[in-house]
Figure 1: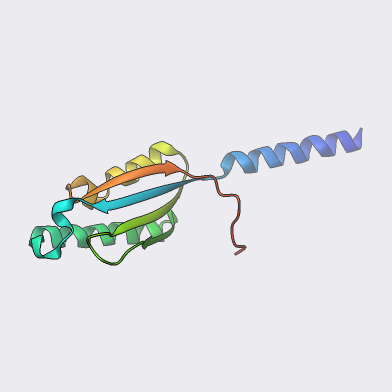
Figure 2 (figure 1 turned 180 degrees about the vertical axis):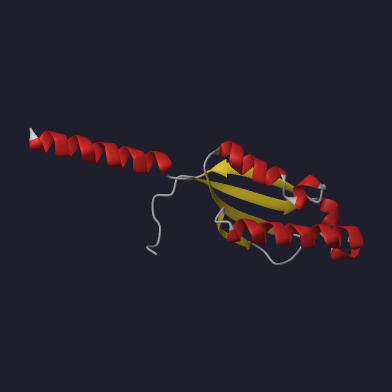
Length: 122
């Protein structure tokens, strides 16, 4: 009886831990064609990019961004990859839609869930 009770408690704890685990999403961003050459950037676009950086920095400090980087440093082929760790798809979508570079029409975005199977131990 004691071992059955222990098994039930362990199952309950494991289930609760799994339910609380955050979801992971890939958030891929790309500059629209007309912005792939910095010659085309006015002060407005430079300000949007600065707002974008500040926004991503705040998300990182708040624990929503696991990792972020740029695939190619040249503006012509540049793609940003951001790994989000959030509660659900709706929260991830809200993050994407509130990114100044998306909101103000400088970049396009793709959001996809990702199942992490291997992760470096912290």
